[in-house]
Structures are given as C-alpha cells and as structure tokens.
Image (cartoon, rainbow, N blue to C red; front, side, top):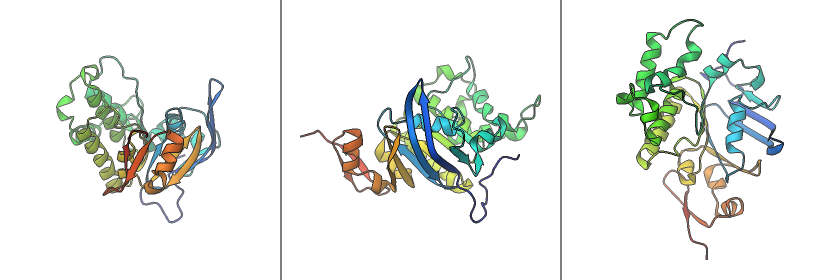
Length: 270
C-alpha cells in the first residue's frame, strides 16, 4: 500500500482527516467521549478548550500514538492501516514535550525528520541534508546546527521541534501548542511560516492552542472541545464568542473585532 498524498487532489478526494465517534480512555478515565471531526485538505483547523478537555489526546490519537480502531481516516485511509514509515511520510507531529536523546545536536535532531525517506541500512542523501539546512534557515536556526538541544532555551527548542516536523515533508501537520514557549515575535514568525508553507505546498494543519486571539487569526475553522466532546465548531467568529467562552472556560472576556479574526481580551469579573 502506498502512502496517501494531498498533492493535487482529484475532485471528490477524501478529506485530510475524518474522525467519527472517537472515544479514548486513559487509565480507565474517559478522555474523549465520541468526537466527530473533519479537516479538509489544505485547511487550518485549531482545536481549543479548557485544560483537560482532551485536545492533546485527540492529536495523539491522530498521530497513531493511541489506539482508535475504525474511528480515524487519514486522507481516506484507516489510521490503523498505515504502517509506521507510511504514516511518517504523511503525518508530522509536534508534541508539547518531545523526548530528546541526550547529547543530540540541533542538526542531527532535525535530520531525524528525514528518516522515512532513508532506505534501511542507508544514509541520508544530499537532498536530505539540504532540506534540513533550508528549514533551519527558515526558522532562524541556521547558526544552531552544532549546538546540543539541552543548551537551548525553551523557545529555541520549540522552534527546533517544529523544524524537525517541517523537514519531514509530510502533508498533514499536527501541532500541539506550537507557540507555548515562544516570545511574541517568534510566535508570529513560526505561525506565518507554517501558513506560508501551507499555502505554497498544500499542507493541512491541525493545531491546538491556548492563545485564543492568536488561534483566531490563523485558523480557517475552530473546534471547541469541552469534557471530551465537541461543544462548538465553525469559523473563529462563531466559536470565539463571549457566551461560549464564559460557559466552557468560566472566563470573563470581551471579544473584539480584529483585522484577521476575533480578539479575546480577559477582563476582571464584576
């Protein structure tokens, strides 16, 4: 079976992601309780929700890290039918806290993203090395190649984690809080780069984010998870409402119109 592709999809092609009735329990506790979700090819969908809503669990299931037989299809293929190398050519994940081998340099870590294209017992090609250099430069990490990951700041490591995912060349990016450790300048740089690559190469992006205003500026659609279920879905203006955020976040906010999407401003309760 060949890995599915998002390039030039024919009319009526399957969505990038289809989730139907997804249920996940961890240590006997239900985390996701029947989630339905569709992400079209080339779309940017951001999942929001309060702590414990199941956002990271959803991305882990989509990335094949949690069993979900029959509930998930990736570009029309049942998730459980994708072999590991096939999945890695299609789906790239940036977790909140990836496991990093001790002593690994930035360049070598990002080069791991090219593993799905290296033959067994083979070596990385000149094209693989060039792909890594290109993505390091794009993420302002060109001078960090020989640095050990352990010596970097949290924000610098976050950019390296994203660099590995982009070097992977997958058509579906799963980003779990991709800007959580970044300052505001690098937040914008990273999200602009992801959006640029999405438009240039037809990538599909499914992200989770806590910063609601930032999420609303980049997402085509948003999904609000609460207690393991979809509480609302649609364009940012339909999901980022004062009533919904008060109900599910128990937060006092004002939602103001912005140039690219709604702006959510916390206010002190009366």
